[in-house]
Structure formats: structure tokens, C-alpha cells
Image (cartoon, rainbow, N blue to C red):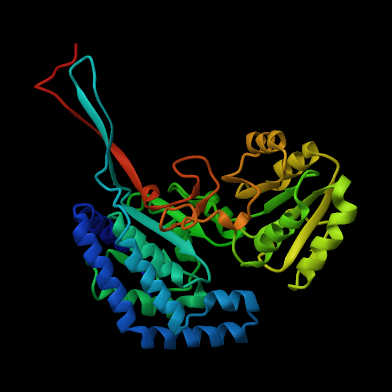
Length: 395
């Protein structure tokens, strides 16, 4: 099947202008209709997912990735429940802020508006298809989706269901495994306003190097916890086990554990035993890998200085934390670790839009422009300056 991306982009731009004018009530009604449509087509969607899973198994896909690919009745119900939850979130579009009256007589404020058209390139997880569509709709944005070839049938079934109840071209899918289409999408700067890649480091790097559109970089975790000499060791073990084992395949799971040398002899055997019970294996010579599995890098360090230096050298600036009873060391760690989320005495797993009270998450950005950390609805908006006067002229 030939896909005309220019026509697809132009249609998305037209749709975005119509979506931008919809009221909050109108957008919420669309979201409820979207959730109902997916529920109605559940049997078709799950059948498509079963075919994708069989193909993935035949291709030797890992168990961790198969789990991310899998939909079930319960998982699909959870996805549509999340869509309905988005209707309860505050709508950022139209918010007025920084209002002021200038000495010239100019009345000025900033007003939140949709970004326009989002291009989302992602791998493995079919839930992203619905999540992104719902968040885009809530913020008045159109979206072009390009999922991985391993979920093509599932994504096609999901988007077909959603398109039955949504405005024309509001949500579109590049329904082809042709990787050349990704390169073409990255060049549609006249139609697409932001690219959001969700996948491995290779995908992010490819988008960054080849896009003429602003790219949100994130979701790549090489996450650290440093166990300070003063840490409560019993409580620290609970945090480490949670950070590594709760969901090892996600981007905020723990990748490297740093332990102060003065407690290493007593502490490391305890933490290794607790982790080994849960199937974790250990390495001590690889610190630049996002494991996304039950593998953990461990290093003994001589000081807080060495721990900070190690994190600065190896972190992806996603999530890093310290376990300590020292307020001084905690303050230094916060000041010197330049990551999107920095934690003191808590699991790296808390770097999540839902846990941060955002209600929903588009991605976790590790860059510094526009958005950083978990991206909620506000991150899918920009703003315009609005000025007014009484036939005001500038001197």
C-alpha cells in the first residue's frame, strides 16, 4: 500500500485547526466516544493482537517484549478506563496567565493553545496508540501515529475503531512497516509541529539526527541509586528492590546501584540476596546500558564525590537518587545531579506522570527545552501573547 505522507500531513493540519476550536465539553464527549468504540471493537482488536503475538514469537521476540505487546480483556479495559479518566483532568487550553497592564497602556496576557499536529513514533506497546490519541484530543491536537511493525495489526484495529467516532483525520496511523516512511515523517515540518519518539536509544538518536521538526528526547533511562554511608540499610534494601523489580522493563527502573565503600562489606550481601530471590543478576563492568530486565550494575565508590562523578558520566539524565540520612549530602546530590528527576530516599519508579499528580503522561523528557520530566497535558500546549488597547499606538 502506497502512503502519501504529504497528503496525510496536510489533512492532519486541517483537522488540528478544527480541534483547536472545540470546547472542553466537546473534547470530553469525543473521549468518551473513543473509549466506547474501543470497548465495542474489543474482540476484533484482541484477535489482531493475537496474530501480532504469534508473529512476534516466531521471530524470537523476548519474553519481556512479548509482555509489552500483549493485550488482554483486562488490559484493554484498563486502557479505556484511562481514556475516561482523561475527561476528568483540567483542560489547559485557553488558560490565561501572566496578565499585566504595561505603562504604555497595553493590556497583555499569555494564553495556552494546542501545539497543532503531533508525530509520535513508538515501539512495542499498543496502549500508547490509545493513550497518545486521547491526550492529543484533550489538548486539541491532531496526531499522526507510527507504531512498530510488531504491533501493526493491533494498532490498525485500534485506530480503525477510534476513527469511527472521531473527527476526520484527527488521529491517523502510518499503517506500513516501511522504515523509509519514518524518515519522510521527520521531514514534514510544514505540517507536523512536534515529534515524540517512544522507544530505544537508537530510535531517539535517529529522530534527533534526521528530523527537521522539534523532537522531544526522553524515555531512555540509565537510572542510579547511591547508598550513602549514613543510609538506613534495612529501608534502603526495600527501596532498591522496588526500584529494580517492580517493573524492570520500564524506563524508570533501576540500572546501576552505587554503594559507599564503608558499608559495602556488610550491605552488599544483604541487598544481593534480596534481589537474587527475585531473579536479579549482577554486573560490575557495564554502566552505560538501560537494562530493561532483571540485570543490575553494581559499583562500590569511595565517596559522595565519586558517586556524583559516576552519575554525571553515565546517567541519561532521566532519574537518579540518593539514599541517605544526611541532609547535607542530600542537598549536594540535588544541586549537582542534573537529571529530569532527582530523588532522596525513594524509588526511581516514582518518576511517572500519574505519580506526580499529572493524571496522564505523554512521555518523560530528558531534555531541557519546552518540557522536562513527565509530560502531562500542559506539555502538549504552547502559548500565544494577546495584547489589547484603546486604539493604542507606540511612541
